[in-house]
Image 1 (cartoon, rainbow, N blue to C red):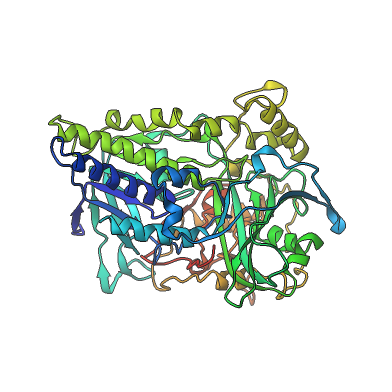
Image 2 (tube, rainbow, N blue to C red):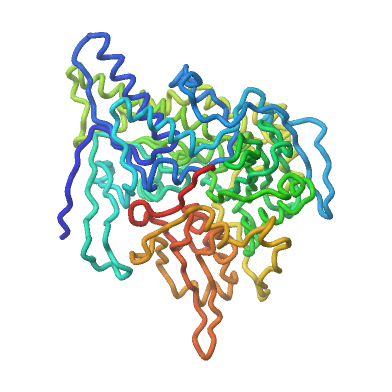
Length: 572
């Protein structure tokens, strides 16, 4: 039995993104405000934020056009603190891209995509700035501390066990071996992002799934520097259509940012591809690269330079796919709790809101404790003490916003046209779908994939303009700053490798080699008599979790690698 150190705190927050930082900030403020009143016992709690990235912001990625409402609620004068805002939104357009380089402007921007009053931001720059403010409050933030598994006693969450450091590829201790410590708290807040490994396990173990299973898309993005007059700061361009087939959910964007390192204009260009599709060759990265070759997008990027790359999954299921987000000793926040509005393409403001509401639920328990009540059960705040998290959300503007978009993604199950008709109904009738249907259903993303039935998946043709406008996956991974310790156990755990080599080859043609946007999975055909097989390149992984989501057999488990491993995003 490995002996592990234990560190005890009052609140353990996993993930230094908008939700986790908002929770820490607001909870510390609530405690300070209570103490300043001088009424009753003082509330002084130790709050720790664990971040798996090598630094705060290294794993943070969003589009991003941010609705500032969530941040303003916890930090009303945030604009006076010199935040790194790229631009206020100015022009706002929607285009339909067509095959053959054609495009038509949508005559009006749908209400859900009107961004007046919103802000173009680099989210990893923003969270770095916010993390500094949180640390100034006395909150401890530990980057490079990946949570490997939850510490549980029955159904109670007691804290988090960190990943071991210093193991070789076979799992044997090296000279620098350090067992992962157990970080314990009275409440553990999981704000680890989309398809977080801890939240995934907890939802499955305790049966926390919502009315619908969560359904996902993968977003792929680059930041370019282009001539300053090419695309104004604050300009927002959204697109739908080509290069996606009509049955695939998704679309693209270009956002004008601030000045680049060489004095040009930074632009965020990206594309979202649904993972709930039948085609085993569904390739979010390839669709994105083709997207850039459309004349509408090419003319913005031509002559520019790509600076940064990233990919992430997005929880697109909406209100009915949100899991039960509280229980004995735990809360789920941000993407981990499904706080994303798929109709608005926005989740940052809801992440901030979820962190705020989580802090208020936790503070309510601590306040009762300060008044002398027996609130802890088994050393943690029990479910009944944290239930106000859900009720507060249901009374909030965030719940009303998600209620109006509750049937959005499900409307695209029958293709783009049906989805747009459904979205129009929702806009007119308060969230009800086509012909006033409500509670539309969806399956898990991987369940949509169709078997080949004798077909053979051929490798796609070479990308056009490769190396100047488009890039292969390895080149993009290089620009993501991704690094991992090579000699460590693989953090992509394939529970049944034989299924990949035999059954998946026959039935689906090894779709992992297509859907992974970082070329982690390669199929080696076997030369000179060698047997064919799957080659893993885990050091390429950008932590998007697409493989964990889209694997048709659900035998791939993404777990946290050794501390600090993964992308090193700078501008995303």
